[in-house]
Amino acid sequence: MILENIKKQIEERYIKLLIFLILFKHINIVRSILRIFKLFNFRNDKRGQLSIEFLLISLISILILVSISLPLTEIAVDSTISTVKLLETKSEISKITNSIDDVYSDGVGSKRILYVEMPKETYLIFSNDSMLKKGIVTGNLDAFNYSKQIKIMFNADNINSRLNFKKNINYKVTIEWPIETENIILKNVEA
View 1 (spheres, one colour):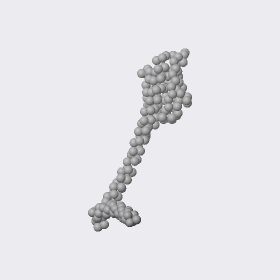
View 2 (view 1 turned 60 degrees about the horizontal axis):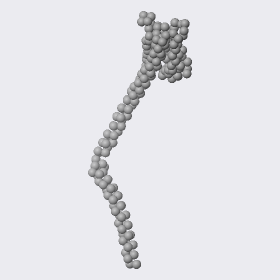
View 3 (view 1 turned 90 degrees about the vertical axis):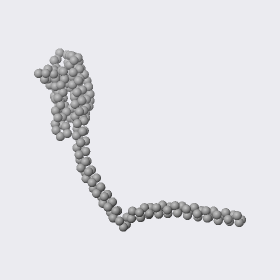
View 4 (view 1 turned 180 degrees about the horizontal axis):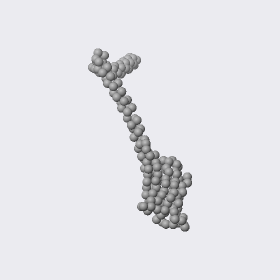
């Protein structure tokens, strides 16, 4: 029984010692933090005020830079998107002219069907250049802040047609040189 009492007392003291050590450890951490603050002496020195002023000036500078750079970035992105759409439109027109050249080189009775989708509303005029003895397609496109005219030449000199394409609609373009006719015929229908 005496041994049991001694054992209980040892356990109680041991638990109290563990609790004390845990609390002491946390108190030491708090003391270390307080020492760091005392080291910089924020209360009596004006360094804290200087750092706050520096942060405010930095924040204002960043806001000014952002307010200037965001509109410039938006203009650059719009210009880039417009240029990409212009190049995509030119690529689609080139597909049509390449198919016209294929029909022209295959001769009377040939036909090609292709699908195109213009990223911009486009009006194309296919005509002949009698001096060069070639065909030419002309299209007016609205670029970023100006109108851009695209001219692409092709070999067929027997075509006179006009095609209108709406923006982002898939079109089925038929290029045909019917038998017993001199001209190549172009048709576009919404697919």
